[in-house]
Image 1: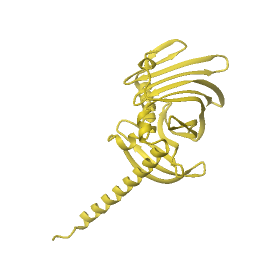
Image 2: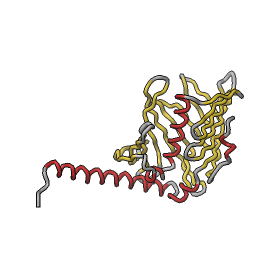
Image 3: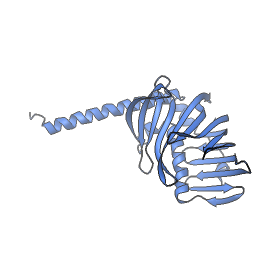
Image 4: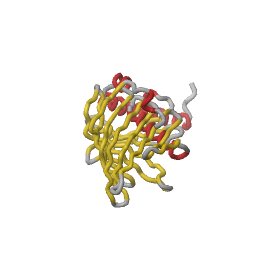
Length: 246
């Protein structure tokens, strides 16, 4: 029998190492799915309605906001937010319904196009990823192991999420609980690349699914948004009218 060549052996070793890394990444995701309520619940409850309130930090100022968000995987989203700018309050509505989207401010509605539409799709894509089940089931998504790290001085396991047409993301899960505590990605904002970090905490079970009641977003290491969920419902489906043009 012919012996392995050096090249063949190197390829075999690489393949085994890659398979082992993929298995470890999948193990992290499987633990996270269980921690977040299990595949059956995550698959069943694909819709959410939540009321939020929080603060936006911009140019050294703080602007308070409140509103409601409704989403349904994989590609439907409605946000209605009222933000206090001091001299005036602005009500903004943004809707994504598949390939179409709209934005309305103080009653004036326009269709989302170009970068704005792509951004809305990318944000809803992240919601899709946060369901976690697609990380194992969607063949278009590649998951690779990053390794161990720390978030807020607590050990975490990290994986990289890649898919054609979307920016890469890094998901970090608490090593003890398995809960998602951070998502990191690099995105273009205002004509320059920014490092965006989203932090999740204060999880509560809703219809058997764990939901983060607190979220904080940092841009290039600086606080950008902090918000609390004041009420949340996990549902199987929302009425189609929820995602109609505002």
